Image 1: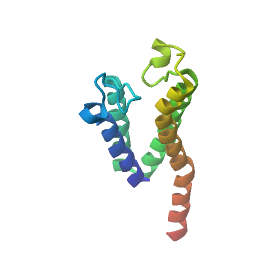
Image 2: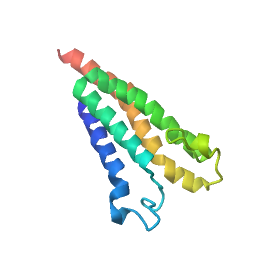
Image 3: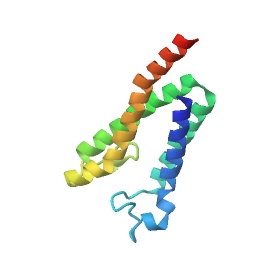
Length: 139
């Protein structure tokens, strides 16, 4: 679990840095032609990575808790973003409300949150039990 939390920490450090890589952003600052990442989005990515790093550093139990809670929060943000065009982590649903973006844009803009959150939920609720059962069986 801790190694996977380190993977998430590194991944979010890289995601927070995407806005600062020139060839990944167009002239309007749109990342990969889809995402308009603002400083607060980067801050959320860095904070998510920092949380993962702290959990990984502290313990197996903290890493499992990270994946469970983070996965739910992040995944639901992606689902809300897909359904409404605005998520809650960046305050979009409160500031912009429901948008009229195309379904394809909503899908591609939110699939990273749905996938990353969904994988975290699987790690936290399913994979962590298998590691615990394996550790208990071999001890």
